[in-house]
Length: 129
Image (cartoon, rainbow, N blue to C red):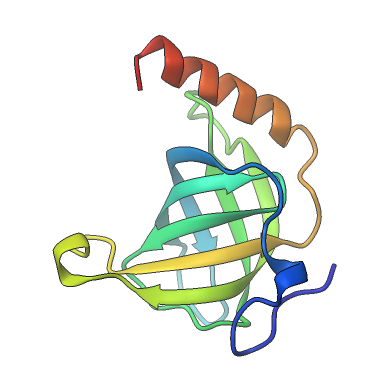
């Protein structure tokens, strides 16, 4: 898979798959970080995600990502290798906890992710969200 340039995502690196609002937990394994960094998945598709985080992550950074898309807390729903293609500081009124939003592209499609996304959307509809 081709990843975006250091200046931001090329058009072919932008997600063309349907994005699904998620608001689920994630952990990022960043280079040179001593422990996982927490993030919130804002939206996700089979090819990438938009994450909210308190940590600045530079465009071009490759990271490991564990995502908790299901209510089962015993293990992560999906694990991916990803690359940051966009990193933006959020406006102060939005940034109380999550001061950065980063867009990542997955190195490859995640097996079974479409099924997990369908289940997530069904749970959200049932709750009226």
